Length: 106
Image (tube, rainbow, N blue to C red; front, side, top):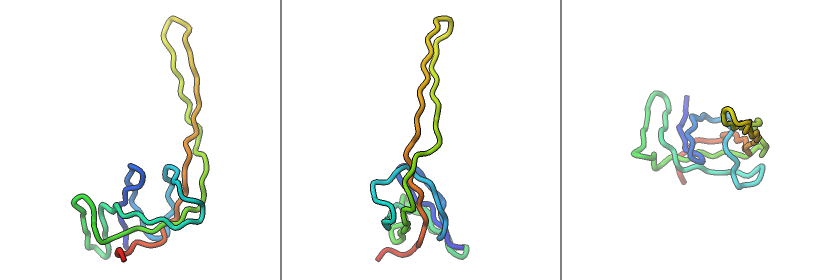
């Protein structure tokens, strides 16, 4: 089984070909193919390459399936004994990616 640990937007994800992952919103359009070069680890058939800090000769290609808003996060602030209360909501923008290929860089 082939998999990689890739850094996307400040977070690290363990991905295999065919996986669908949810990441913070990317600037590219839906349907676009994006390449990620920050591969931190690559494993295939029991052989593991660990980058220092990155594996230089591997890239991960993914297609953007859709952009959407995530689940609502409620933020509630209050101070005791004063009646001070504030409630805010926030919905982070997300992108859904389908990992198409883990391959050597061209």
